[in-house]
Length: 255
Figure 1 (cartoon, rainbow, N blue to C red):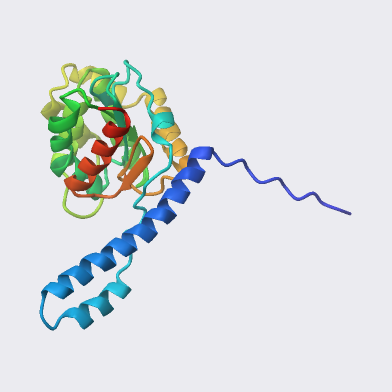
Figure 2: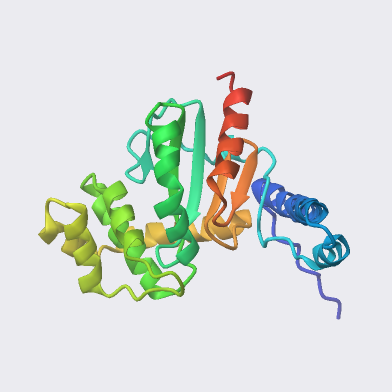
């Protein structure tokens, strides 16, 4: 009796682009790390051979990316998106995937996003669109639901800031219900009673799960992950890397 081999599931075209981007960036990251260490070695007498040997062993950063042509397709530019910040008609859209229990997402939010907002978003050059994912369990879902509930009252940016300002340097913090309500208070959510009721809304939970599933289909397996135009960045990158990314995309947009 013959059996049919099941047909492979179709792969979203953006997922292919992100996979190619990761491979490319791993190669480029390894080359960049090697060159940086060699340059440092050449500037220190007697250190050249040791540093060069160490450079050959330096692993590239996981999941760093330079995606090809994904950004314009991923940006929604929805004027009613409560998780977006900035001019809907900005020349460039920066999309971020993040988990509210991710320590590296906290680093970017606390140390890098304020500069991006000051230099690009507030000037109308870049629009920021947030995509929530729940990679670290049930409480990641709860935290994302809470952020969406705050967003419905116009307080998503403040809630984002409150959550990550309280994040530990390492590990995935617990997100019990009372803590989420405390973040809402700190963020200035006007109707706390409604906020607390919204924590139990099935539609907000479904939206978080759908966003997580979409990210996984695209090949986003670690956070924070960013896409702008035809380029991507992964991890808690320094502000210089974001400036280079955004300036390149602005130049491509004729700005």
